[in-house]
Image 1 (cartoon, one colour):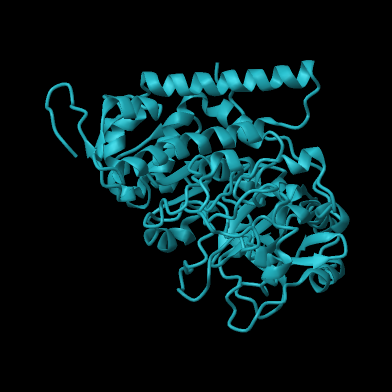
Image 2: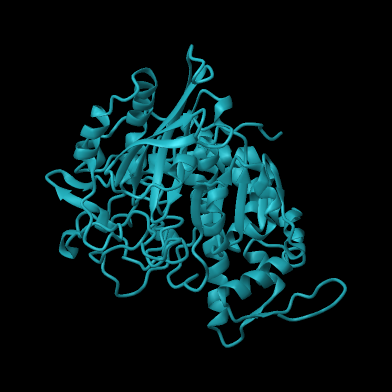
Length: 498
């Protein structure tokens, strides 16, 4: 029975003191935390690797290391969407996630730099609609933010939070709707208070502050001094050129630090229960989403407000495509999280080859040139005839899902009986798909480099796929990733080669 809600329980969104962000000795919980490609580095004793596809690090037992790489080398990773070479819709700004250059050394270890590039208040005016009421700095380009930070349809709910992308930056806004006895405001006062940062892994720190400030703005409009003080304290110091990058840390300092997983950063895009509830929400359909993610399709998720939990689904979709084999996926489009989008983002989406986004605007369903896969609640569909066979679950898909559920039950049992607190469901799910992807690409890569690059039914079964039902998926995968192997699995009616 598939559950009808995946509301991830929110954490206590307090700012985390520097001492908590970078403990000098990792606890068992933090030291063994999931390396999800957002906030982690190789574990102790692992070899530095050049991560590809989503540039997501994994544990030593699930990563093939590049010989000769040093653990002291800067470790490249930026999460699902951190392509440092990409540009925004104006072509003038790097689009990236968190990297080692975003950290600084403190007396107690590593600490992420505060990188708030803007803080703003958006209000709904009964005559003018959504409008930016106040911002710092005053010369920052916030065009369109008034619609990104107050989702269409929000007037029906009392509160929400929204992640979004604005050019090369990521934003977080907290929305609140308060009834008032005012004919001018038509009985309701609605505002959002938000921030922009080069990295979405930092934004979770300020959720609690933003929630408090939006309530404060509703009750005491025009009192901006707390926001002014916040910006002065947290504002980013960006280098000339405006590319959103902060000063790199010296390579020599990375040695003792790079081997520790920075657990707190996981809270932003990986809140407690986020991945497990995402998978329970979709049930077996998660295997369909996995294939679309691995094929780098454009995935659009529709949901009415509130949109905060749907932004988490965007992140979770990106995690399904994590691969940690060096050199794999360098030629495929980066799988980018756009988080919340609206009609103002249509032009930007037209240029995207691969993305995951969510929206509350039903009109997007009609814009079929903008997406490959459309998700409405638990209904996954595609208008592309070539992709429609992927919507059908096969026996291998069901077997993989059964194994996933079995592993989850074993984990829950060990937690209850043995008091095992070193592992969690989020770690299990992310590693499950990462290792599944690694196994597929490792097999294909080894075959491509062998004297006989022939992909047989036995190879396909060993990868956890169905030789017949997954043939079309494999053909697309080989083409998209540019893997040169011979597929000799015949269709039931018409033998062919790829």
